[in-house]
Image 1 (cartoon, rainbow, N blue to C red):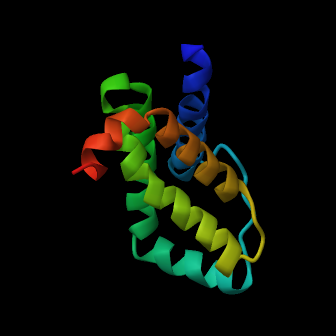
Image 2: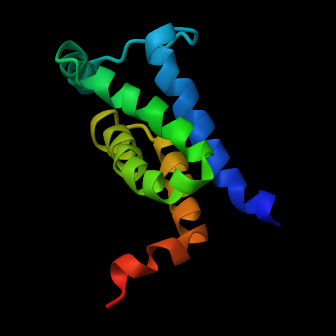
Length: 122
């Protein structure tokens, strides 16, 4: 049963590790977006902001695999997942992997909810 509880975390780590490292290694061909999405990505690419985000994705993906850091990293990676989802919905106007990222993150946080109770309890 413990292995089933860890599947969302490992999927989340795998997705962020693959797509984060793809930014640096270019092993998956991705089409260049057009319109508002292309303009937005062009700006964050040119300002090196995307390099920072992709570096955080790779580091957080590795830390998700390490059990003692998992609860903290799930909270740190949640804003990245939400931003990917919001970019797809509001700028690119086509939902994609962001839905899966937010869902996996929410499930993983729910599974570890006892770790977060001290944050929200009085």
